Amino acid sequence: MSILEIIGGLLIVIGSIFLFLGALGIYRMPDVFNRLQAGTKASTLGAMATILGVGLLAPGWIFKVLIIILFIAYSNPISSHALARAMHKRKGYMYFKDEDIDAYSEIEEKDNSEK
Amino acid sequence: MKIAIILISLGILGFYLMDIFFGIGFGVQHFSNGVKDLYLSNSKDILKVSNVVTSIVVNFRGFDTLGEVTVLFLASTALGGILYKKRHHVGERSVLFPASRIVMSGAKLLFPSIVLLGAYVFIHGHLSPGGGFQGGTIIATGFLLMLLTYRNYSVSHNRLVYFESLAGILFISIGLVGYFSKGSFLENVLPVGNMNDLFSGGVIGIIYIAVGFKVAAELTGIIYTVLHEKD
Image (cartoon, rainbow over all chains, first blue to last red; front, side, top):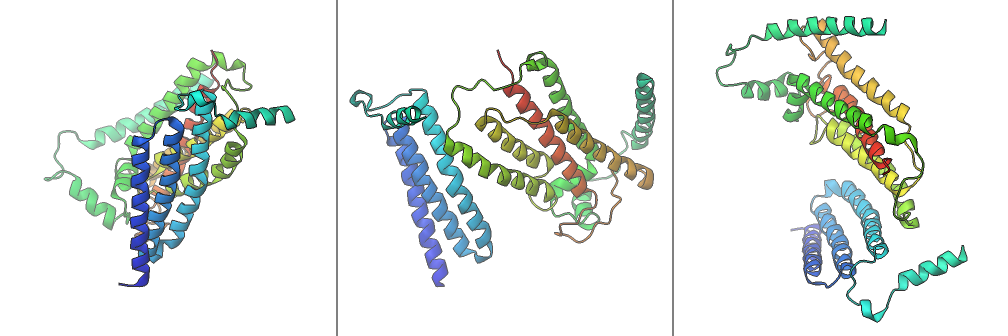
């Protein structure tokens, strides 16, 4: 068993743990934004670690793996941002609605007033 | 005059199609065990294609694929016909709110890579899973992303029609070349090359490129028409 195989296996295990935690977070979190946080952040790291582990186990695929990781690294945050922003614009269900914490709309108001 | 040309070309087409249909010989059992063994051995030995599904869909059953492409063409034409009245006020689409700056710059980066992936899928249709329909759909999703992100992004309808017609003409003319030189519609006329090479499988690669362009143009047209509908 070479050192690459050990590192690759470890990466796959770490990635699987993060993917599991992401799934648990989607099930367990109270509102849309918390679920998005669990479902996108954890699964981004989990998917990247798992795929990198596969690349280390099969070194012939390493360039494909790097391209896939690059693709995940820039498509996943953008899509989760779009989802969260759409939910914010629709004034969706928020768990902490009573506490009046809404930093994004403050920033947006500032942006609009500067224009 | 136009109608006469159309009728004459339809008549010629119909004559040759009748010829093909009467040559099939319905009710005659050609193979004792069905055609599956023939397909498997022919796509490996004669066509040298590693993706057997592709060799069946495009070569052995290429006429069916032509029918499927025609169905898609008819669907997009019918949709255009239904929504044509409402397409007069073309301008900004009715979106609830514009996309944010992050999505805009991200879509600009993502669009070329989506188109590249679609082109890869339909060019490598005879080597790996996928093919013309899948690749064309991936390209259309790229256009969908751009249309959803930018409110004034527009696709030239004339250019779409041009690509679509050119791809259809390419498909049918390859079939006719096969008919006139080898005796059956969509018969392979090009050298087959070696198995697992990019240039293998004869006409399959070219037909899948044509199908990919056609499907991409049709689906993009459908998406564009639907997004421009206003109530």
